[in-house]
Length: 281
Image (cartoon, rainbow, N blue to C red; front, side, top):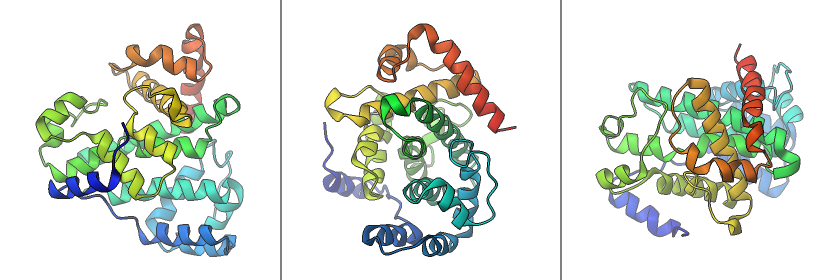
């Protein structure tokens, strides 16, 4: 069921829930890209206005998926190697984590570390399956960062959110029914509103809304993106040696959507996890 974004935004505001505004850098970049009146130097100067964002971009770009092992000394180099649109998607992902955090609460560090690692796994899966799935690594990475972004929004609104849902020291995140019962809102809907407010592509917004299920076929690329996120999340749980309660329900549909055979799941996990762990050495 499609959410009326404007109505939902008003309802969230009435509950005291604040949707983070887009940083100035993102707004400027979007305007430049919309007019096609830009060059690499101009884009690099805009991104470099935010040193923290630039540092995070360098870190993400060093990934084998995006930078192919290259070391970058300037934002211009990142744009030239990674590509303009792909760099913009990475900047969007990086900007979100700096907009939704609290330096005084460890739970935010735990959350964003988890999101970044799932995003990295999603990008690796997308790179490997791109000829079958037609979802690109930067899109999968962005969706990986954003897919649970309703959680930190609710953490900022409700100080007892993590404690109430037992999230402080685990890899697991909210049970939707329990979340709705306690707070009369769910992080999937909130995440969808954040994604719409930040002008993410429609299929990414839909994937965020439905990421705890395999949505209907008519959602097209969103179905594939949900499958990538779910497989990345499952692999993250396995690497962390934590139970993944959703996987048994979604496994068959996820593997089918990504063109993977059930008998080959273990081999594929070994391949992706080896690449992931090697990138973190």
